[in-house]
Length: 409
Image (tube, rainbow, N blue to C red; front, side):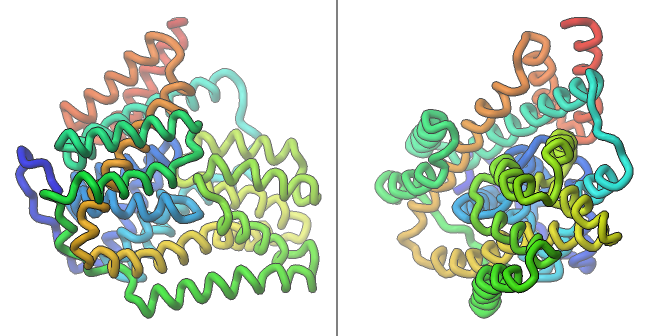
């Protein structure tokens, strides 16, 4: 399913370092991936598909599609599964820990010691990060589109999926993916092929064990909370439930957590909103925000670090367990030859969904004047044409954004 005008580049097999190699790459992403879940997927595509070649574009898009239909943080789930593919379950844990730790530690530090960030300078900084996200996602849409929408039929599926998501305000991603699969089965049966390498994800036994653990925790935590209300177990149950039932990532789960934490007295509304604002400027997954209310709730008991660690694990755990279970089922399904056309349509729909997210919310929230559009275009050119490393692009775009704001442009 690679564009015929692009040479097929062999994938790189696991090296001797295994989980350590995964940890280092994921840590780099955890330190540099600003912009929310859609931008993270773009960073992942650039790192794992284009630069490292750990998996192909079609297989990556299939992983994105799988994680989009599961509750939980999609970008963290994708990184978790890529780590599993590369180095087994230890690689999966290394990928999650390294990608999550920087943001979680920063949120914990802010809750513990730092005053809330604010003012004009902070606002300009966050605005610059939004422009970075626009450039990164635009580059990913172009790259994935060339590979996964190389013909008119798949391009039409991508455009239709984007239109559906934009018309519904982002609320019909699952419907767009299902529609893409149906359209692919009807239109893309000729010339579509399944990924050649299906090995490396969770086995049926491992997937079944993860699904069973998810079911046990989902049922047991609320019961344990009833026996010890307003304690650490109750807080863990609250965050586990949020991670298990929320579709759409961090931007959706944060308002839900506010409705759960503030009225019940875990933290004040002012404290929650301060942390919410800080989280927007953090790299890595927005779910790492859980460290902030966890630390504040644990301060009176003198166990802020323990409570923060528990809330972070609790909110991520259900999505990771479901991702492992889903990957086992996904491998079985991809062994059915008739599914090739379905997968081609779903992959095209993934490109459309990313394109829709590029416009709303990224473009609409970040680009409000000509200078913003010019800075985003410069960032895209640096990434796409000159292949400048992302960290240098982030620094350059932040500098341009701050300079434009200071000049009143």
